[in-house]
Amino acid sequence: NAGVMQNPRHLVRRRGQEARLRCSPMKGHSHVYWYRQLPEEGLKFMVYLQKENIIDESGMPKERFSAEFPKEGPSILRIQQVVRGDSAAYFCASSPVRQTIPGELFFGEGSRLTVL
Amino acid sequence: AQTVTQSQPEMSVQEAETVTLSCTYDTSESNYYLFWYKQPPSRQMILVIRQEAYKQQNATENRFSVNFQKAAKSFSLKISDSQLGDTAMYFCAFMDSGGGADGLTFGKGTHLIIQP
Image (cartoon, rainbow over all chains, first blue to last red):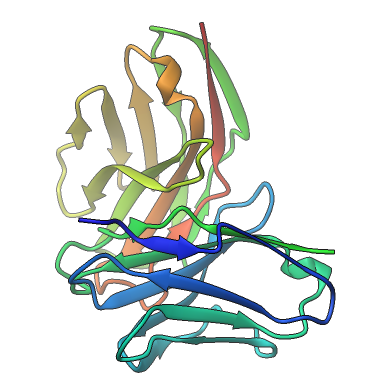
């Protein structure tokens, strides 16, 4: 049973380009969370999605960032017109049902975005 | 909003020693969950131990145990017989009993180094 898969593991972009990060949750999981980890910081919540629904995006910057979790395929975190401050590790976590075991989130290994 | 504070940016102990990592939190909720996550150099987030606030008994998982002081809003992690593989970042995290509209709230982490 494969774990949460994130790709790419490392992504380098120049300022102004777009970054797309993908997350495939564990098999049978229909809930996905995205977190961002800045250097020397803990993880900060960005967005919580179910299939075809954004449940909570209170942690998402108002501009340039968007997320989706389509009926088929991985969840995607999209950052448009990247700036140096977007450089961070982006983690995806999944859970089967949101409140079955609170906090029982399974994390991927993260995608490290570097903006030049 | 909840906050989680880890006041020790870095700790270093000798192999086989016991080490305690501190964590305090602030919340107006009466029921919630607390967690310790480990992030080794591979960067994957691994759940170490979980505590439900309504349970007075401190959680234990093999060499890992917590000292949960609800009135003081303190949740420290004790690692006994520390091993080289315990070297990692350790994050304390909080989730309210509703599953948390924003998932987990993390502290900034403590970098634990186990010396041979």
